[in-house]
Image 1 (tube, one colour):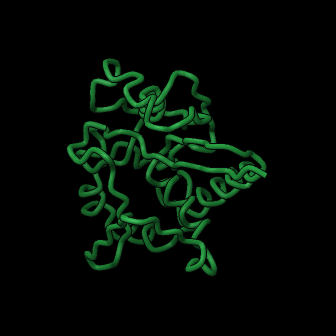
Image 2 (cartoon, one colour; image 1 turned 180 degrees about the vertical axis):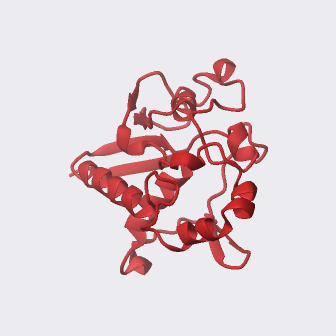
Image 3 (cartoon, one colour; image 1 turned 90 degrees about the horizontal axis):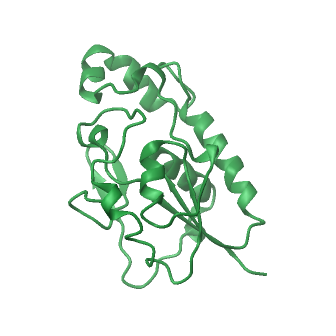
Amino acid sequence: MQATRLTLMCHARTVAQKLARFPTDEPLEMDWQSAKGSRCNQFKRAPRLLCGPELRTRQTAELFGSDVEVVAALSDCDFGRWKGARIDDLQKSEGETLQVWLDDPGSAPHGGESVAQLVERVAAWLATLTATPGHIVAITHPFVIRAALTQVLQGAAFNLIDVEPLSAIELRFNGRWRLRLPGTDPEGAL
């Protein structure tokens, strides 16, 4: 039986990311039109290409090919009334509320989707892929990728981690340890 290979890829940079804002349905920061198809040969064989419904994920997916399937389960977390808000502004105006949201995955003080709801949505989507052999590339959002990693690493995570030769992960400490998955374009062009 052929295995399922899932490559989760974060969309290219947006202005909202650059300004530390909660996302809206904003376009990519780069000139994606001139870069269409520029990454088509990144994989040995053409994978099944999926993306979330937002403009930024659709534009990023077009860098890898034109046969893209939009999947609702890959949509970003619904941040409710915080859409477009600067995180620094929320720390000043709703500091306690923001902290509750950061500490409690079941909370949704913004009126949108809680992290727990997002994790459930992504877990259900991952379950649908277990019977899908072959390579799938899914262009999505940081929160969706975090939710998928949460599913993979739960329980006895030690034996579920494959570390390839010369691979690297980055851990950063700023009050708590965080895993950082570096992109391929450090200048944010993609």
